[in-house]
Image 1 (tube, rainbow, N blue to C red):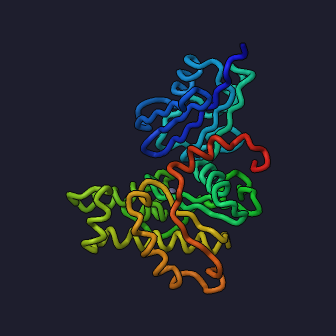
Image 2: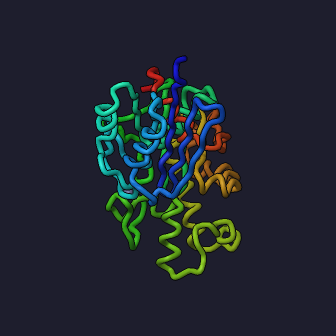
Length: 283
Ligand SMILES: [Zn+2]
């Protein structure tokens, strides 16, 4: 009898590593803190336990090109050329890795069946992915729409990329956390809703920066559908109302014509998209 082949999807974000193994009777799900271990060792342990894994798709919160990780400020990876590392050891294994927002936009475009679609996700960081005519816009080094790192305002601390003026320092979970720590606040980024209710200056600067990031994405991408997701958005879905109410003050009217801004309906779009990375029409 032929052994059942298995497919492993991994989403590795700034805070959590989530994985899902398909092909068993019930998919096997796993979650652990990103800081817990090395990505190479994590994958190796799966391959040791399930040698019939034939596909691994990885959604990575960082810069990636052609199966190699270009930078990984928050995630421990002992071999950056991850695709070559595993495929040279397992010749029948297909391994794909891409930026987490590129994975998210793959899943969102499949869900919405919309050829002009963008995703902006706010979690530990802030990222965006853009698809036009069913192709991801990638750029020369697969770094198009690294929206979290557009220059915004100088902050008193540095971003993971090394600059001190990235919009991610204002409009992300880690950014809010850094500002709260800097101002010796008793609150954490988990208290965002309370802070917004209080009109706390750090919450107001978060909302303003988020609106600016979304307006920038709409203006540059000219997408028809804009999907908002990520941990901070899913825990604070009321932010959509603020965005929809105020976006027209930031975007010229013709760029907003026919545009829908929606919350993600998927539980974990980057993880779903990691499982689609071998669908060649998108690459
Ligand atoms: Zn940055």
